[in-house]
Image 1 (cartoon, helix red, strand yellow):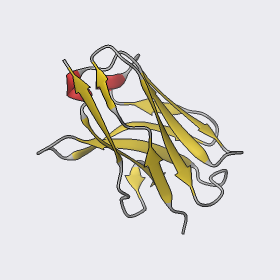
Image 2 (cartoon, rainbow, N blue to C red):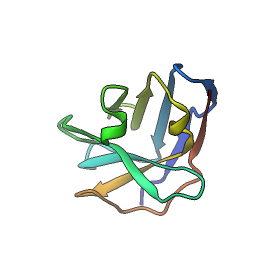
Image 3 (cartoon, rainbow, N blue to C red):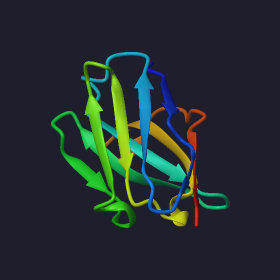
Length: 117
């Protein structure tokens, strides 16, 4: 079973940018869809963005136009470029392998993003 490790989270001011990385222990080229989720304190974990092997992307309405998901199958890594960050983007961000839009792996440690106003 592939394992995923998230990184890139940090403290950033509102309006700033971050790029998150999700490194897989195995090849991701055969994994149809991968996604980024986030969980803010006291809230449920929600899907932020997803990408298929063909490059088709899906975004939550709250991040459309600000976040971009991409994948590099040669590096077995999925990225989340986050621009124009807002305080409400503060959360722990996780990646996962999806079947449809259902996560299939146990959750990792995630990476924490804090956006200050």
